[in-house]
Amino acid sequence: FLVFHHFCSRGWKGSIKMVNPTGVRRGTRYMFSRGFKNHGTIHLSTYLKTFKVGDIVDIKVNGAIHKGMPHKVYHGKTGRVFNITKRACGVVVNKQVKGKILAKSINVRVEHIKHSKCRDDFLRRVKENEQKKKAAKENGGLKVDCKRKPTPPRLSHFVRTKRNTPETLEPIPYEFVV
Image (cartoon, rainbow, N blue to C red; front, side, top):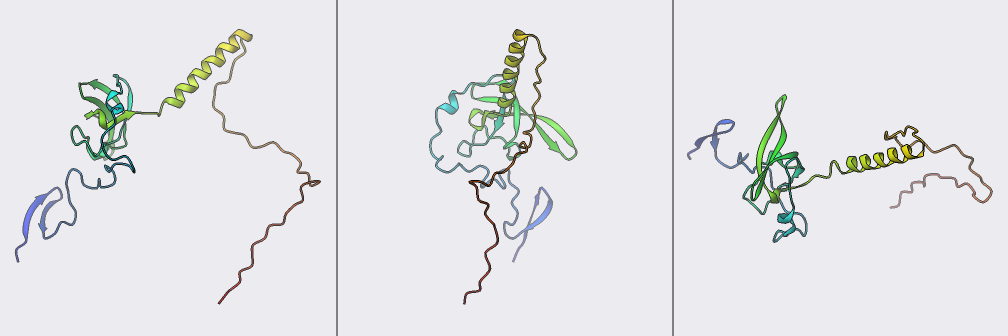
């Protein structure tokens, strides 16, 4: 029989069967699939979200919309909006190429991006710290420590056994049942 040779991304290759495909959407069977009970028409709220230049967005590809779909390497990445068009947004995303990290500018339709929640906790803490500083200034000008601290270990205490009888814990003996 005949073996046809063709040129693929890894060089000349004899193709008898499709062993390792090299398409644009290779390996996206589960990545681009819709979530459980999330199939069907896209909600209008997706299109009614407002994006502004400078917003931080997460790229999450919606497999149902093929237009304006970013490449699979950008799925799950976080970037910053630099351009707004009628139906899409320009997003700057960091991409690692061998040893370098390059800033890539891609155009993505609004169905494939959502506002990121990565800065929500930071912005909440900034507001709380400003309120603490304002309250301290009104009360006498003492400096407030705004740093985050890990939860300390519990304080030492005595364990009473008056109404708390101790239990002995031991493993159950193994019994071989035929």
